[in-house]
Image 1 (cartoon, rainbow, N blue to C red):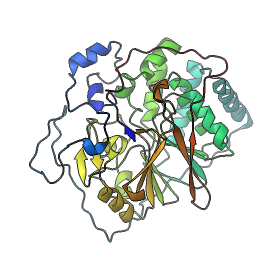
Image 2: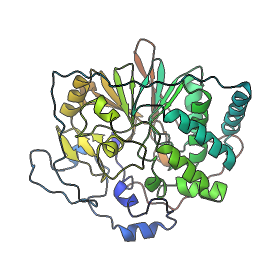
Image 3: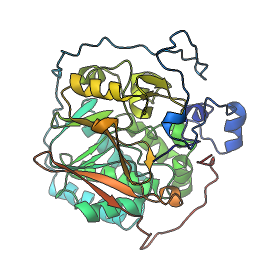
Image 4: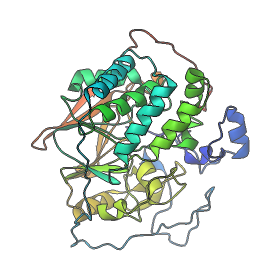
Length: 403
């Protein structure tokens, strides 16, 4: 079962200007009243009667006046893709002093303690140097463990490391949404960044829809940075870093791994690699679609009730996999009660790695373990209770999540 969300909607976040903190949620709702266009109902996608491509004359009102149907890329089932370039990660050996520094920072974070503001600034700068070398679709080698949304649930992230092993013994691919919702977004994203800088060839990070200035001002990360550091400097530094995150990954040229889904204007991996990604997530377009779209039980493209991205049917998934020579798609972005959900006759699998989401949903979580022979195993796990020092639960005043 897919649990859809009321407030995970880009339309709500558009009420805040870029770079300006939203401290009063009522201001956001006054600036952009919630309508039926913006809400996600707690029903399966099949029950959403969004218009399909069979109605090309229909215009759907959007906050940014997007029209329907979307632009469709030229398609050719006989075409095979040759990437114009591949990710060339520059090999880098850390000095002994830097390795000790990174190990110390990882140790601090492992105790659920925040780094200093100066440490975060320096760490983000180092990570930015690594990320800017990576293509929009970064290439990943097996074996690797694929992790879905973690959403600031730091202790569940540490549980994943207990289950699958710590870097550098285990390679990890994180599908985004490191922040918001959970109480420990700062610790969670800093841990992943620290591991990326310490073991750049072992950790791959891509961008989720919550790695955005607009979204993080509404769903907790901005407020958490203010509370833990006394200013918005860390939030600014980390959201600047988010602009450098790749948009997707491909494992051994066989498994496509975006945060969310596909775009009607992007038919190949080559086309995704041509996107200019070093900016805030736009309100619409292919970059937005990769971070917001969802698979649907109906065929073709549909308007997403999230207010951003699209829904895509089995024919779309199978066509994309065929054109690009892929086996299936691994994506995150949606809460699923068992932690994973196969759709489109095996063409797409959703993996969600935040158990008991928002500390109240009662869902299981899952990760995907892919071995060196490209065999995959889905591992489910339950919520890990907070332990150790620095544990403080804070009630947040943010929009209600479920209808």
